[in-house]
Amino acid sequence: MLTKEQKDKIIKKFKTHESDTGSPEVQIAILTEEIIQLTDHLKSHKKDFSSRRGLLRKVGMRRRLFKHLQKEDQKSAEELSKKLKLKIIITPSEATGFGTPMQSDFGPDSKEEIEEETEGKIEKSS
Image 1: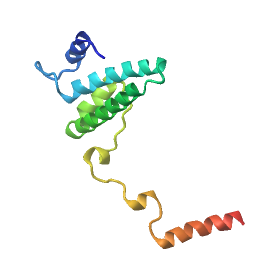
Image 2: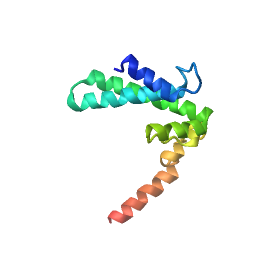
Image 3: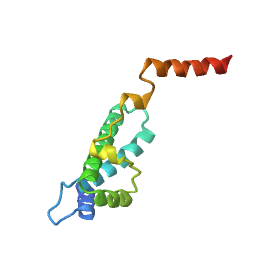
């Protein structure tokens, strides 16, 4: 858990305007620091499953905020990921919501395609 002083320091560093406390940049920076602290905690308390769940929740929230920021302001998202040294990779289709994978992207969807795949495997094993 971050102290008030730690949060204020992060807000000062990442704010986009004078009275900024809730922009995606600030929220992502705060979540990143909380994730770092929780990760350190879990290294020494491996059985603390409640904290692990909280960590996963914060990671998911940060990912959603980052995706939103990338959709709204690509340049700002790239700068923030460099400042925080994040390795978040979101494809353009994932950021926009278009181009989601179709059934055919995961494997054969027609009977003929399935038969072709199985014939190739049978011939190789003989």
